[in-house]
Image 1 (cartoon, rainbow, N blue to C red):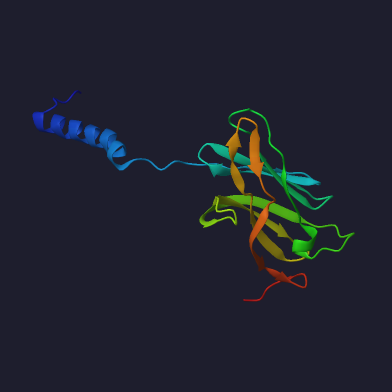
Image 2 (cartoon, rainbow, N blue to C red; image 1 turned 60 degrees about the vertical axis):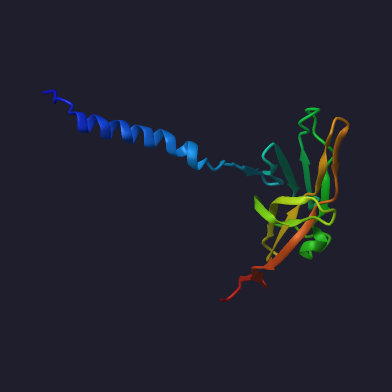
Length: 170
């Protein structure tokens, strides 16, 4: 059975509709950003945002122990030169060690690189045998039609999460 809509209920319905549609306009929205990562037995690949318009792609080769990062230049549509970091020394790995790495990216908007370029994200690399996790950033100096200026990947900080193969006792 249909109920007759009263003047008061119509006003409340319109007020709710206006409020529901109008609040996002006045309050603004928060952009959502997604990163992804995947791995195989020999490497990890992950993405991280340099800024709202530019995404970095990181590759960690388990065989060589090399962390590499690049961007797809917005002006040329081409991948740029790799920014690199050899990880063996950072993690104290022996020459023939078979490291067990894990890698993800995250936001970090607190710092500037040595060149004064803002750092908007980091890539976290953990190595299970050494028990270390290190945060790195890739300094990007900007894009031009001729290419993107990059510098070597730099560490931000390191934490020891495991000692002698065992988890640290708290």
